[in-house]
Image 1 (spheres, helix red, strand yellow):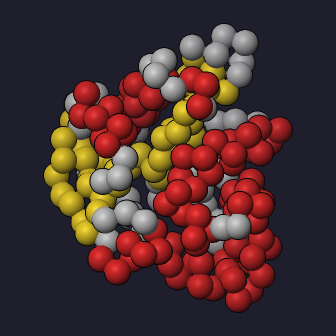
Image 2 (tube, rainbow, N blue to C red):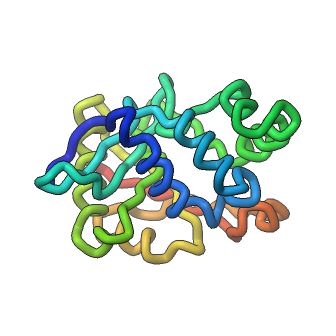
Length: 193
């Protein structure tokens, strides 16, 4: 397995499918229906904010996204959202998604999503991607990596804990639970330097 920065335009559909499989249960009510969500994701993905795990033959195994002041793995402004959902559909979606937004800070590198192809789960891909995120953070001068994990994803949280992350805060979703389907998100941090 090798880790590379970014992915090609020909892989946008595949990355969008993997992203939707991982985050569709949380984002489905806002970004759905699936067809429109995939169209939006293909357009909004920014490969400059992705680390990709690949098999020896080049197949994509998983992706770890990160966020900087220059953007995130899934960007997409109102114009991009409008292309997939129309102007009215875009407005309410942008407003709801803004409630999930996590800002970058000057102290911690923000990992903004990790997803692994279904056939590659349990093979160490997630662990390799987390180490690659730590290396990327170090190369950019950070001493800590930060991420958020929803309570309804205990498998991911267990992975993060095994890789040295510790919980530092928890934010309840309150009435947004009806929209996003999770009770709370935990912010986790790993010291790397």
